[in-house]
Image 1 (cartoon, rainbow over the protein chains, first blue to last red):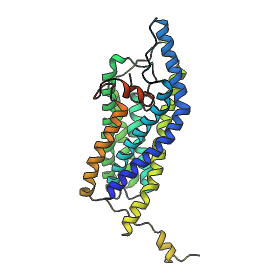
Image 2 (cartoon, helix red, strand yellow):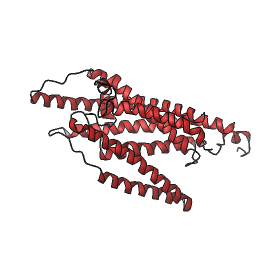
Image 3 (tube, rainbow over the protein chains, first blue to last red):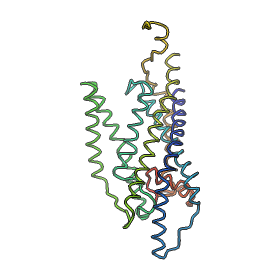
Image 4 (cartoon, each protein chain N blue to C red):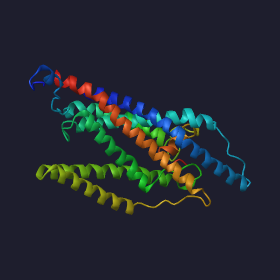
Length: 240
Length: 74
């Protein structure tokens, strides 16, 4: 039952963290999305094309839509996070629940968000050719899958080295293996360069800052909240 | 000064972490993995590169989130 309780608490922690990330994205991300859409509209008008039909209004997309997407994302990764935590606790790590949750949140952010985003950064509307969407989606998910696999390999090697030598060498070897394999993977995957001519560089930069900032808020608060929620569950179990 | 063996010191002592047995973890891992991947799929890819439900409503509704969370959108 304990794994189930941790899973539920992970999803709750993910939802709470997503609420904070939503507030961040609302203030820092949405203005950049609006600027990118203004660029797109101006470009369509310059080509004499009719403005894009809006099925769902922009204000709904920027409020309920963004909130729903962020909550689903938070709950999804919160659940996966809790499963990895349940496996690692007392097995790969003997840290307290709070410390382990924070460490795993940092690792999750690096592996699932930052490393894939270095190769395929988040793009605002108007950036990206719809014709290549299939390929871009595929390479993006392949990048995430490879990043997770490389992290698992680095973790196993680090674990072995720290058993044979000491913990410091273990962390160093694990990190070196991770950096080396990620560099190879990123050099091997196809490049995507689809920023349209004249797209304001500052909007692109601010959008990407906001997108990554939103993830820092999400993963950081998820780690802290999950640590606090998991502690009573694990302590009650240890006492009984 | 507090004596190390006083009841207060014992009450706050943190027990050593005990791993959750794999056979207790496995069913929850299967269930959680399925549920969570499905949720992430709807945020990240439905009615984009892949489509289970026809139309564009899901895509349009999660549009801003999909962009800001880093998924390729269109």
